[in-house]
Image (cartoon, rainbow, N blue to C red):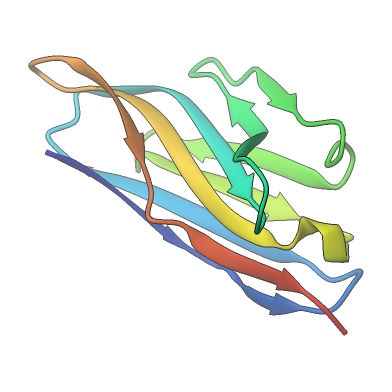
Length: 119
């Protein structure tokens, strides 16, 4: 069993910053790709940023230059530093890890954390 627990969401004013964390626990052998997705009301879930296990990163155009994804392999944790937040960044943010357990590989999701950007 693998669980992802997210933290760090909240309410912030436009131009402000938040840092999201996502920690994996359970019978983990290794974690490959780590990613952050978001889903705004009435919209499909979209990729925000991803990082491979050799630290290659990819960002959605809408967040390039403002968001930074990072990871701590010893702690099986991913981070998303979000700066210069805009009202359109408001969404539920989900982390997604490609996890290898001792039995199989699996795609694990966090429970989601709300980010609201409003004055």
